[in-house]
Image (cartoon, rainbow, N blue to C red; front, side):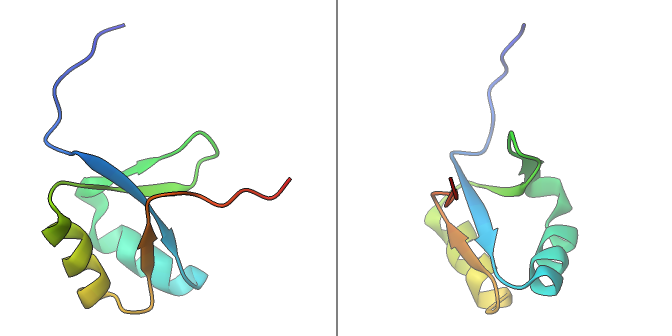
Length: 70
């Protein structure tokens, strides 16, 4: 296994209706990853990235934690 440096410092999950989240994911494809469950995760750098994402996509909320139902 090999690790490489990344420009990203945080990861955020997207909350919102499916269409709004898909629109966000498609527009930010270069900054997206998938978590262990296959859910999309937005990779961000400074707080500005988070604020801009929420400004451009008001129907999507970025959260630093993922809610799990047991």
